[in-house]
Amino acid sequence: MKHLFTKKNLMWLLFGALICIAMYFVFGVVTQKWQKTLITAAYYIIGALGLNLIIGVSGQFSLGHAGFIAIGAYSVGVVFQGDATLANFALGIAIGVVITCAVALIIAVPTFRLRGDYLAIATLGFSEIIRIAIQNMKITGGASGLSYLSFENINDHGMFLMMLITIVLSILLIVNFVKSSHGRATISVREDEIASEAMGVNTTKYKTIAFLIGASLAAIAGAYVGPMNFFIKPGDFGFQKSIDVLVIVVLGGMGSLSGTVIAGIFIAVINTLLQNYSDIRMILYAIILVTTMIFRPKGLFGNKEITDIFSKKRKEAE
Amino acid sequence: MSQFIQQLINGLSIGSVFALIALGYTMVYGIIKLINFAHGDIYMVGAFVGYFCITRLASGFFGLILALVIAMAACAILGVIIEKVAYKPLRNASRITALITAMGVSYFLQYTMVYFVGPSKRVMPAPFENTVFKIGGITFNLSTVIIIAVTIFLMLLLQYVVKRTKMGKAMRAVSADPDAARLMGINVNQTISFTFAIGSALAGAAGVLIGIHYNSIEPLMGTIPGLKAFIAAVFGGIGIIPGAMFGGISIGVIQTFAAGYISSLWQDAVVYALLIFILVVKPSGLLGKNVKEKV
Image 1 (cartoon, one colour):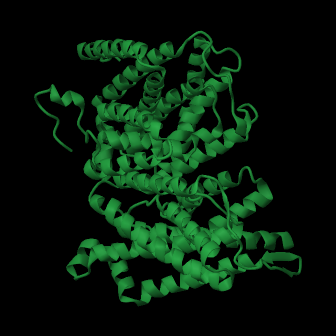
Image 2 (tube, each protein chain N blue to C red):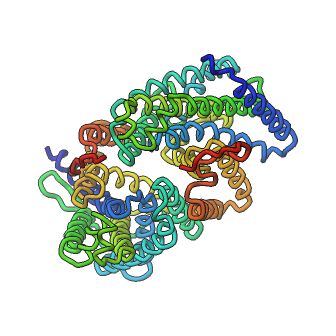
């Protein structure tokens, strides 16, 4: 904990705050269409940062992100049936994170024996079970979902600021985690699980920690879905949603946080630009996706960070 | 008891379609370790090709056979084109990158089809009178019999191709070790294309069969069966051909029983829960061999 308020962290916090303020003003001057784009981008970035920690840093291939997003969304949704205030939003997030951590632990214990694609399919299965369970529960409104979820006294502008703050805090959390001894151990699991086990790293423990943090971030991202769209329904949290988030992580570069941020904005902007061609929107989106992958197989940023430009000693590639 | 057998027959017919799709998944995975998420959409294209054959070319049993052959050929060509254009440049990239590309191809196929035929459901005309048989208390349609018969025929054919022909031998060699296969003079690229062709042809046949069974097709119909087939492939042990057949039929039967005896709302949850259980107990799938880890 004593390392949390180092000079470096405070500096980055200041830098993040400046970007937040800048984006906050940008949000004020653009049209409503682009405001929606910015909010969508912010939402995807929060979710993708969590998934990047799971896939990019700990090297575990999870296809179950939609399930955690759904838990976050429904926790806030259920709490908002009372009053849609900021306090209730915080309460909803807290409940969502607690449930998510519990569920993630239940998922992690049996499935982390599995590797690669088997892990992917097991997490996908759990995520679908979560969705089906939500669909069949009374409190969540069943298949028709919950509505009237916008904030009572916060407009889109205020919500966007909250999302920006969430992004900055999440990035700080992940960067500090990765640079800590726990983070180093987690990276060693990604690089070579057997070797790190031989060096005495408790691989299951570090995989689980990364999975829990990533899942919690997904729940926090999910919390914004209700206020963003005014309603939530189980159909929104299918397998496709996990893929949407995964696309951002891979497109930005696995392990690169700045890549995730840029890719999140990139996807949201592309989606908005393509809205004018609604009948071929998805075709163009697919072509852009495939060509980007073919020409940048490691993602837009590979495993580099935007900050590598400033630091003289570059991180060794790989 | 008669209800049990009834459910079993329904499960077998839907399961054999899953098995046909799962075969393509498992062969492609076995040879280049790619989860080809576009495979479910090739099945959809097969259904549409079959639809146009039956409505425009010929009806009756001859029409059905013609539709099957044309759909299989069209899907085989489509599969090879997709492999050459989208997957070949990524042969050495990370597997998640290839997976995202497969997802992109899947979107491309779905929405290109939506663009040309519209997003709504279409009624697939029955190519023949769908006679209902009654034996004891059990009823089954002619279409069920045809699905199971065609599936068995195609599986036997596949077994013959894989086990008895030179190309099949090459496929097995490449899937065991691509580098060693190349050293032995096997044309690896050609073999991979051939695998895609066979897998896609089987998916195309599955599309036509499901079309005549449910009488309705739509451009987004491929996603869910694609996912189920992938699960089936993992269930039986991905990369293993008999595993995919076994897995597909098991998933179909389990799903039908879950819908009939538990609740249709929970049927998918039961399938997933069982899948996770199998994976935890036997991580390499039911027919998979446990590979010792080498350092």
